[in-house]
Image 1 (spheres, rainbow, N blue to C red):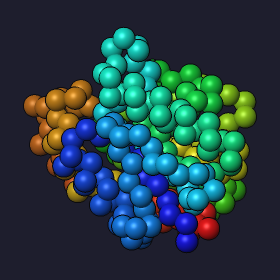
Image 2 (image 1 turned 90 degrees about the vertical axis):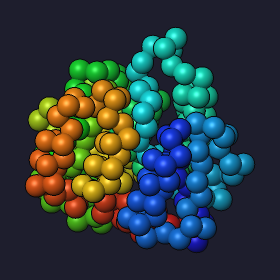
Image 3 (image 1 turned 120 degrees about the vertical axis):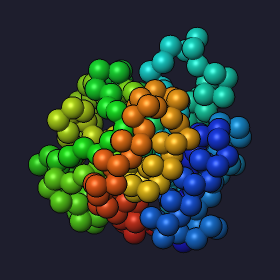
Length: 245
């Protein structure tokens, strides 16, 4: 099997490693089957698109819709690299799955309006398949219910999509929870690489990043522990099973 590539942009080593282990676990891939590209510090590996099975882009503390002048140098480098990679992904029709930051980058690359209108605080929301979502082969392979719980926590979101993009999952506060362009390029607003315990662990690392009020953190964690979000991680396993080559 040709390897998959996980793109990470988290500068915190401990958080990046936890994310790495979650993606390995939920995809079922071995270490050598999932290459790790940390674009906040390194360029993308010297790989041709035909030499890999697909790309998974995880979340980030970066916000793509921020003014350029406010972005740190590491973010500017990472976004330039991601957009370069997306040029190749689209040209080669390479399978791609972006989560949270992935919806902002793929959306921006494809001409979506990404802004802060539909941001959501850290929590669990109900996500609903659209008619197109119920027919999508990746979603069918993952066995997602017509409505399911998804973990969110984002300052920006897709406001409007270009005509060639297809909404697959919607939400009440954030209308675009998942979309597809072409036949094999996907992005989710919810986090398929997180379960409740890993969400709490990550939230502790980002308690001062504006995703929730720090003085309400333990109350928020208690609420999260009463919820379940076990369906979204199935997308990662299905992505590997459907697109491995």
